[in-house]
Length: 235
Image 1: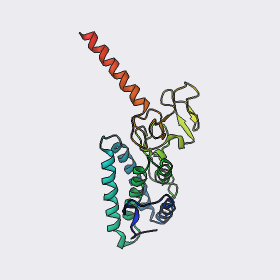
Image 2 (image 1 turned 180 degrees about the vertical axis):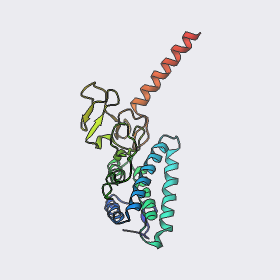
Image 3 (image 1 turned 90 degrees about the vertical axis):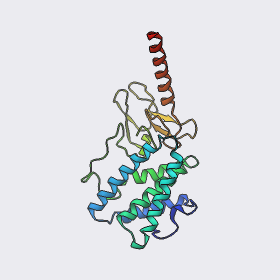
Image 4 (image 1 turned 180 degrees about the horizontal axis):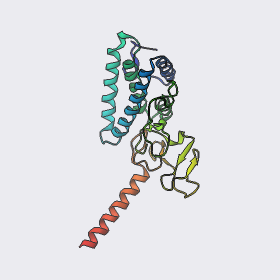
């Protein structure tokens, strides 16, 4: 555990092997009182949902950096008090944000961090104790985990990390490794044309770099065609 060290925000020098430090901190957090572990798990769910929304905004790169610096500053301010619920919250958020900022060049790193934090209930010894998991469209969610990620990623979660994927077209449950629904042939995974990250079915933006998915492009084209047809009919 690096409570007072430079941490992730000093020159953004956090290396991939620091995932080991994150795992260590999560393990230490598992020793917090039950009510604090429940609060921490709930806060991480809310945080990942917030980041999904941020990723859909045009200026998400600058907003991610702002949040990253903010959580880093708060973590440092709490360093003198030792490991605590508040320190863990800001440290985990800082870790997640840096991995997401770096995701375009290192998507596997982000996937690992997303998996760790989106599925944090298990390592905290909670399971579903006292907390209803946030509603997910198709996956347990992780969050997503690691994909935290839902239809509008960051992660957020990458449904390809789930053991079962439910098709949003027909509701059929498919094995996680399939690319097309085995009942209706709908595409289950959308691979980003820019960075290659795999996002869940019906995602409008890439969970890693925020690029529009083919689903959004096709949806926009359909809407434009419908609008044109309606305008022609009204003329």
